Amino acid sequence: MNTLNELRCTFPARSENEGFARTMVCAFAAQLDPTVEELADLRTAVSEAVTNSIVHAYRGRTDGTVSMTVRLLPGHVIYIRISDKGCGIPDIAQAMEPLYSSAPAEERAGLGFTVMQSFTDRLQVTSKPGKGTTVTMRKKMRHGTEDEAAER
Image (cartoon, rainbow, N blue to C red; front, side, top):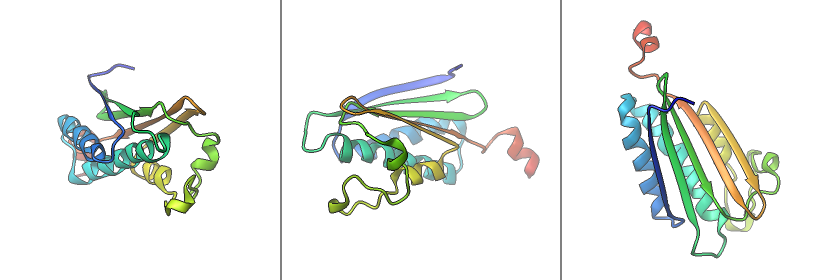
């Protein structure tokens, strides 16, 4: 994977850091001259991934962290990897089903992965129970590309 630029950070798994994460990704993505809609897609997808780590990975623990890697790839593609070292997901296929929630008593909608899929071009989830979860997303930013110019 030929990386044009990269940003890495690790932050405490606290709800107030969700906004920090999505803002940081959008600021980094600004290098690709995205549209407002593309930025909104990124904000939403990152928000869902980070919130999943904060809410589900570290139930009752205050020492957890979330790691994020953002890369700019050739072809106006942004790559985002968000990982935690929390409890993990025992059944990824089940967790990715719309409306599934591992915490139904907490009135969670169970749409996090569905939302991530709808706002990115590619979503991959890997997880090991007791070891953590990694969510990897890719999105081609079409604003400013030759394809978009040809459509005008």
